[in-house]
Length: 265
Image (tube, rainbow, N blue to C red):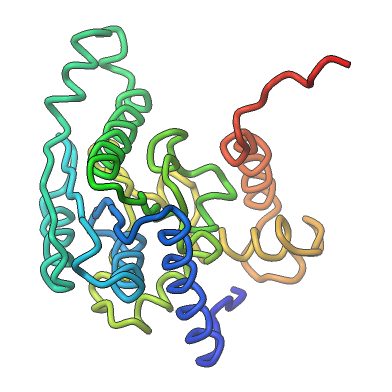
């Protein structure tokens, strides 16, 4: 499989670039504070480390927002990260809020995807409730691999002011996390959005992140045709390439500002 990891010099340059990006984004908003949802996963953990480097621990407010299907070890990891970084954090249980939505519209109760997305959007509302009150910027945790295939909830985890690690493929996220000192058990931990019981990212995507990254880097972002990619990368199938391409095309609306009609002449 293709290795997308950075050299040591590139790695440090990326780290410095992202840290400066966070500083500049927060400063441009006329504040010095940021809010970050902490899930216990590698994306939010790396973002937290870089945000503390950029802003100082005293200027980052972490939110741990477990739901009915959140794994206890994920929430424990989220709180552990906040304590290790000396970041002030709050724990908000989202299930009572989601239950109120389902009481209002019970027809959706058995719809796993709809309810899962409601959980993600509830977290977004809480992020902005705190951020507005504290005059802070909401930091996102999305990476490039997931953005390109639409693996995020529109107006949920996609509803943020910026994505500091948004240009990193997943294997680069893991590499940079190791570089900044994230423990190996978190770096290698299976990724999950925690939207329903037993959910994992790779199972829902239908392929592992190394394969996904290779297809995105060489076919969607890169110059290789579907056939050339299959010939070039051992183990990648035409069906996998088509699946990734379809996910990329179907999710284009998630990466755009909501459209308006063209103005009349």
